Length: 585
Ligand SMILES: Cc1cc2nc3c(=O)[nH]c(=O)nc-3n(C[C@H](O)[C@H](O)[C@H](O)COP(=O)(O)OP(=O)(O)OC[C@H]3O[C@@H](n4cnc5c(N)ncnc54)[C@H](O)[C@@H]3O)c2cc1C
Image (cartoon, rainbow, N blue to C red; front, side, top):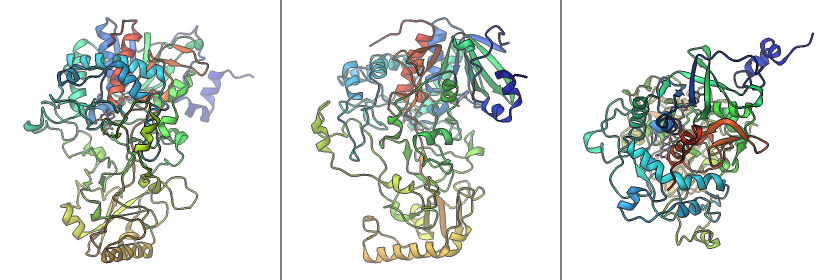
């Protein structure tokens, strides 16, 4: 008896697992799928790229369905800082006398000569067609956001929150939260901050409202599991699950993948960096939404290529960050999940924000220090970050004396036991350190229940208490005692001869003693599916996959921290998917 591919999928356990990501691209084109829903354009992901694309396509006359895996729309964009680096001549730039143009923006974002002090290049590996499209559509995208209810803080563009946004002139603008409830707290921002601070709520809440008002159908708790590309032709829809039930959704014109990236998928991210093993479990933006590589995997299963992979391993920007809040799983420095947040039950603790790294030491899984705790993470290019900047000049590198900024590399180095990842990193401090920081070492600030925080009357007892799923080997109490005693000696001597921490100030001497989870946080995805300047997905043979578009962090070829590229590519993809003329600057 011979088995066809469908039989194999049905009968093999391994294949059944693979079916979660493998699309039925070879399904018999003569047996059409029964679609539970159908629209002209189906968009996967209700974040920055997806919602922007949805509004554009709907306003161009198409019917639009957006699938969103979470019980809420918004994606990482909703929990972001709302700093949006659009440029090329936005109305705010003009208002404040900042002269920018698409050409200037293009040259900034393709400048091979810009390097950080560790030698990493922000723009060298960007795809010029993709950057040209961004440069031409960035300002129109900004005006589109304004026209759809996004309120920007009324001040001159600056460089706050910008990573790899171009050195020539300031481009960061900031979304005001106005009166929208913040997902971090469950309540609106204090009145004094509603028009002056920056928040992703101020970007996404009005866009989601605009999408719904325009008639976009958003299907929450619908997770796309595969793309349909019958007979290797046009992409005709998606497979999804809703509360465990499978359904298929048809797309008469196009599918736009806007799933937000891959860094939350351990096996996928390890293709770029084998060190990023499972202990890096505090992805920035979680638990609000994940970046599970489902878009990349579904695209690859219908033939899509990946693109710009060098960008994802470049040691610049915040692809991996230091934990800025400790004692909780989700320690991204700029997000505090407070008890009123709709996802606090999943976050479990808000964390302790570190104001002064002198108040603690950091040790690895076996109780050893590994770097100056105050050491910086990787840097990224922005206006004012490059002295005497001249576009494309080899002299730019001379203005950056070599400094490796190796905190993260040391944290990820591991303990020499054959495991690729660095293992947990623990912040160790005492009662005096906690008092100086004004920390309350209790829930809801710290997470004792899941093993992200421990306390004990002595250092030795503290080490033996550290038991949790990522602590692969016990921390030897004698090792932690030795480390603390040695550090206290550095405080007496006023000099850290191991890691050159500037004048160590405080001994760790008065109990109770604490160990708080301080493991690095993974963040942006800077590589993904291959697209062209029209956001069409391209296959391994360099050919466009008909009916398939992609934008945002799931798209490759453009290395920049977030919201501008995501909204701009959503803007482009939304137009292209319905054949509408895209407005250029
Ligand atoms: C805490 C934080 C702060 C940030 N601050 C800034 C900032 O100030 N400025 C800036 O420029 N960038 C910032 N960023 C980055 C920025 O938010 C992202 O780059 C941007 O949101 C990416 O847009 P996207 O549309 O690609 O993904 P997202 O906005 O994350 O949207 C993707 C959506 O797809 C959904 N999804 C995923 N898989 C599926 C599936 N299989 N089926 C259905 N739905 C799915 C997700 O749940 C999510 O809602 C920040 C990010 C974080 C996490």
